Structure formats: structure tokens, C-alpha cells
Image (cartoon, rainbow over all chains, first blue to last red):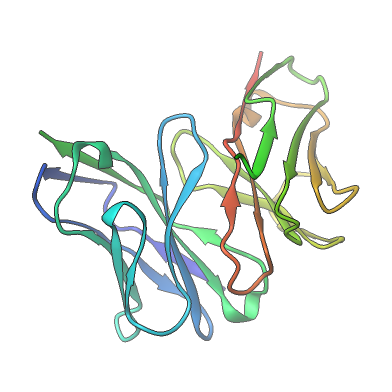
Length: 114
Length: 113
């Protein structure tokens, strides 16, 4: 069975500081990993994905994520946070052997203070 | 241009009255998903279609049904909505089941009165 965990319900960061939102996963075989952002009463917006290749993946709005196979982690990062980054962030995983099924973590609320 | 469109954005239905939510896509993706999301929790997969193949999650209540009459459209039918079914319902599509990135619509907020 595949699963994904986001250990922090909330992350608070001052504007201009670097941010990290943590994600760990469990899946059989090679994982496909995704990050999404959600604003109030909206759908999920795709930020970035890891399929294969470089462990550091760059995505939308200056976000990046680092894939670490030994730690089964896929943490989301940004060098300098903006107040507009405040939102709900979801990590998701699809196992290679699970065809279409994609599972989401519990979400992390990111709050950026001016 | 919106590529995954959910209608309506907000739906109010009466307790026990059947309701249908719709999703359409212009991407010609072969996989379509329905998720239920309550109170900023993780989206919960209800079912998905891979082309015409329907895949129901084991814990999806029988009260929830789905139809996919063609590639572009997918419907979520709630036969007898209860108060606990009030949630955001999210539709997503992806090109295939492997590397394709699921893209989401804006969601339908369902209220049961």
C-alpha cells in the first residue's frame, strides 16, 4: 500500500526567510511525487513533480523540492518566502505499480508573516 | 483557459435529494478522478476511471456513484445526500496513470440542508 505523511500541520515563516514543508512517502517501487497548493475555496494547483532524474526539482512560483530516496522524503523548499505563499500545501504520491491511483498527505498550512 | 471545468461551483441540496456534480475536460486525458475534501483535510479518492474502466475505492460509500459517458465528461451522483456528505468535491484528470500530472478543476462546494 502507498502512503504519504506531512508531519507538520502548520509552518510559520517570516517573509524573506527560506521555507521548508516536509513530506515522507511509502510506496512499492519507484515513486512519482507531486506537490500541490490550495487557496481557500479553490481546487489544487500543481507546483512540481518528481518522476526520475535530478533529485532537485524546480517548479512554479520559485518553489523547488528535493527527492531523497534513502530517507523516502520529498521536502518542498523556497529560498525566500512571500506573504502570497500563505496557503495549504499537499504532497502526493503515485506508485509505479499502482497505475492511476494517487494519494495525498494531510496537508500543511503555510503562514508567511510580513 | 480552464481545462478541467466543474459545474456548479456551489451546490445546495436537500437532505436525501439526489444530486449530480459534473466535470468536463478539454485535455483528452484518459484518466479522471473524483475526490472528496472536508475542511481543508487531505483529498480522499472516491473513484477513478482509466478510459472506461471504473475503479472504486473500497471505502467509498454505495451512496456515491459515477458515470463517464465519454472521454470529456464525468459525473458524480450522490443518491441520498446526508449531512456528512457536505464537502468540496474535486475532479482531476491526467494523461495516463504513470507520469501524467493530475490537473484539478476548481471544485464544487456541496452544502446539504
